[in-house]
Length: 171
Image (cartoon, rainbow, N blue to C red; front, side, top):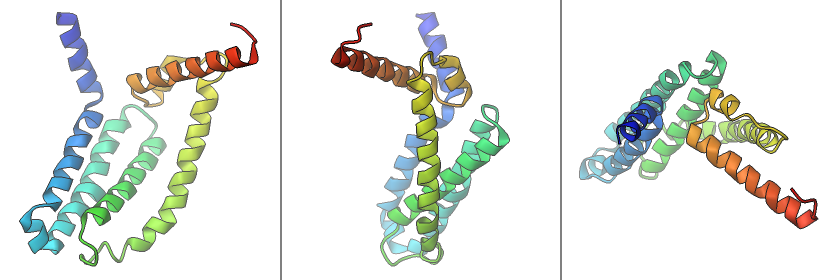
């Protein structure tokens, strides 16, 4: 029982950002539904811009800095800021705000860039995971949470077995 507790605590310490992110997002959505947000959309825009465009990306950078290179942490943090701006625009009532309507063009510029980066990362991970001998620790060292690595490798093993069974190549 003590081992399980210490393992849970260790996981929470190592992956605190991923544990708190759903709470921050839920709090932002909940804030957008309050009467104060509806009554004063300019103030809520400022809150959303700071929370999702500055605070969350900075926390993500702090979380990533000890795990990945500076360049990777900066790119991921900028991606988090872009996603935060998109979320802020989605939470704001249509036609309200001072800054978000001005930044709307950034979505159409950033979206293809983010998709291209994510596709390149996905292709690299899929090539590695479906390769001959993927190394679990190498993926964890890249900043992927261990549970996600385990799920990715389990899925890769599953599809390799299905492909071998379908082609009759055996184990």
